[in-house]
Image: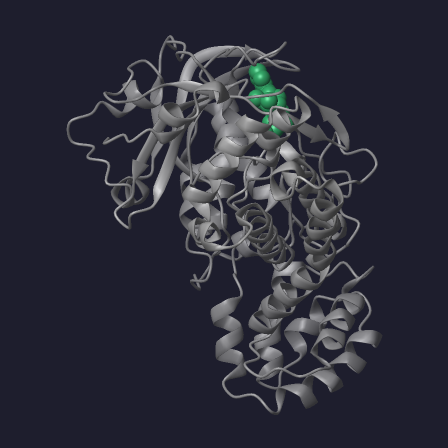
Length: 479
Ligand code: AMP
Ligand code: MG
């Protein structure tokens, strides 16, 4: 790996140097060769198990834990930081992109608080599966380079197998990173961080009269785009805290995330989200709230006159919903296969979701079934519904709208995934790995969800929702 570590070299006060623990008996579960190739990593001369278990520090790495703060479920925590993650450094991909390589679960750091710095096998495999599925689905995301089992048992609700994920990201700068310095009123460090972020993610912003306002605008735009992608897939992040919101606009932190099977806007999976703060339909609102927290941190940089700074930042935050709405419409037009824009489309999309509500309709399958509908066959779609009264009215409107489009069914099939990492499949794969050392289900599921648009005969068990509706399904943070 050819490291080029700008975070380590330029941001001295923004991290603590530390080392990974050496695990007792590391074994490589999965290595992402395609990603390694994209990152220009030459795997011939390195021992993958040693390096990605933290047993061996690769040449050129500057291992460190990053400092950050964050709003967790609305409450500000002034001191978080990488408690179980270790940045090895940055590499430049073949396409010239700067990418962080980070171990997750490699032991305690100065920011571990009461945690053990470790990660469980289940959460590591979940993050591997879901982040790679998200990438294949075209969603901006951190990625998984390697999964290692450590041979160590860790204490959670019961004893669990330990593991380490190697995660890559276009950076790990979070809203919480800004909040850490803003809350301590360390404005010169804040400026350093903002300048670094602009140079790394939004270099064009430098050419504007007010680069910090542009930073906010760009970060907000990318976040609005990201959420529109989640909403187009039925993805629920589950822990949209400001420390889990990147400045790059990549999805990060796959702790309690899950895809909905049956459409219900109020869906929450995370066991710790008791009030539904991060429910499916709340995600755009929460993203806006998070961007407002970022805006607050940037005020002293935007203008030394506080009122002027607030006015300028407020305009961007107030615009967020409109920008999100535009991205969402784009996303829905894409999923519906529409190439033309009609004013009435928003209503058509909204009313489609209304037909699904309280009807136990599978989110992913409903969009696939639109292709048959576009070919004049409503059966597949109708069969997904308990009650088709509203749907049948809606189909008439859809048919009128679709008559002005060409190749609709082809477009719909191209744009809508058949396979997503469904919760029951993910759980089964993780259980087999955790309880029986059997990784075959994990490998098979990974292969399928990383080619989500390819039709596969006889693989219905991977495209179908669970037979039993489990309304109590819960996910847990990987802590
Ligand atoms: P998360 O909810 O995963 O985003 O984590 C929130 C914070 O808790 C971050 O600062 C993590 O580094 C820290 N954390 C989570 N799990 C552990 C652990 N097992 N040991 C130490 N710190 C942890
Ligand atoms: Mg986190």
